Image (cartoon, rainbow, N blue to C red):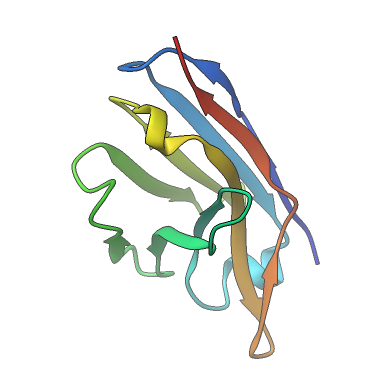
Length: 114
């Protein structure tokens, strides 16, 4: 089982980042895959998810700014983040399911600051 996120970094407010998540084929084709984010001391938040058929769901706080997508040939999940705000600062992790169990990969830090 593999879920490896990458692409985080430091960006100024209003900037953009693109996160990637390399996943095992078994996870990628099973059920929805998506992204969580978490700030220390706060609960983990669902950012976005996408089904194998391409249906998407976004948290209200990122709707219109973030876009989730998947490349089924590469078993890779993406999160394009535009118009970033300081409140988007968090560790972003990708998740998926295998045999009914949820797996969450190690995250990548996104810091939005001037």
